[in-house]
Image (cartoon, rainbow, N blue to C red; front, side, top):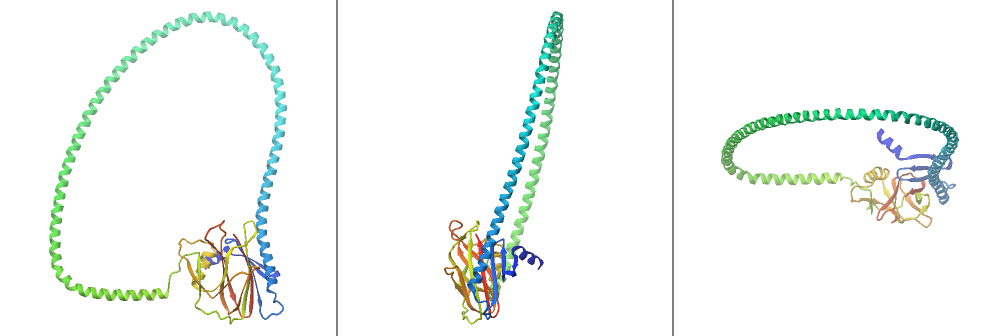
Length: 402
């Protein structure tokens, strides 16, 4: 119960407008806004139906436009904030670049002076180093000749040792390879012997199983022949009992199907005239106005619009609560058949009315066709549950954003 209450509270956001004399209902899930007002038909002071409908229509359109305006204003404010932040960051970055340029200029002047001094010192050091390098060069040449002779001798000894080590390693690898081949051969011979033994044992076991199976089959055939005579005698009796049971099951199934038929899971409706005669003997009325709007808030007219008056029942309750309020689309192509007691069309001012209603609970269901630019061969619905009391005039405005 608590779960169902929370679900309805989430789906329908209700805001009372008692100071204006009517109730405004906003459904964010189906993008629908409706306004409803109920007056006593015996009250002669409040008989201007069109004036009340026009007043509620203005309030509904204003609410739709305010919702659209709030969304647009929020997007604009976000963009302005981002632009200001970008401009502030750009200004700070330009100032930092100017300071860095001035600092770089001063540092460049200091580096030029320092480089000139270093250049003079380096020239002096180069001349002194050139003299020293010439002295050391002659000495180094003599040392290099002696070092080359030593390295050549060491390299000759090293090559000889590497050759001996390589020959020894090759001999060891050949010996290991021969031993490994012998071991692999012994392992393979043992595996072949074990596999042959397993195969012989498997054949013996299969032979024993086959013999046992043949014996059992023979016994079963004998038993079958023994039971055949008895089964033949009981066949007629069983067929008769089966036929009786089948007829009883069919009768029980028909009774259950008559008591309760499963509701089809569907979104679309197929309207058909109820067998109940609509006598117009009641004392109440329903007056309405219908407005369809684009996502930008502009009014739009839809084709094939028709308004149905449907008495409350289990089937329409299921559709209204599980598909319409949740804006759910069916997973099957089967349409739900709904019986209505009266139907009408919108007039030029987009108004409709039902007269002579008896007390009870009804559904007002408005069915139209989507524009071909939005969806082809698809229906759009507006629905509302209305409780009708004696001597009451109910006025309501329906608005849906596509």
